[in-house]
Length: 111
Image 1 (spheres, one colour):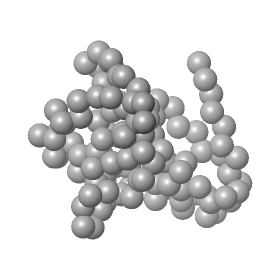
Image 2 (cartoon, helix red, strand yellow):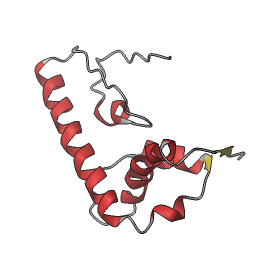
Image 3 (cartoon, one colour):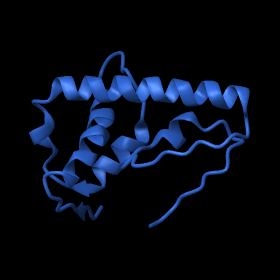
């Protein structure tokens, strides 16, 4: 598999931290968040993710925050099955894959 080379600045590479955190969480015995898509994306990138391994508290915080937001979205979609959920500045978020109820139409805005 050819990997996509990632070359980002210090600020821009922060979008990879939450992706990495969710992918790493899959290895836990009792994961905070289950996000196989993040692992798939991570595997497709040519990037030195090892530098994030010392940020265990960032990993836990990112996963907890993601789980809380996922639960809010799931609750909303339970009440409004065809509702709209808009995420702005979500980076490499895979929330749609985690909370899709099968009735929501995914929209993407490309700038």
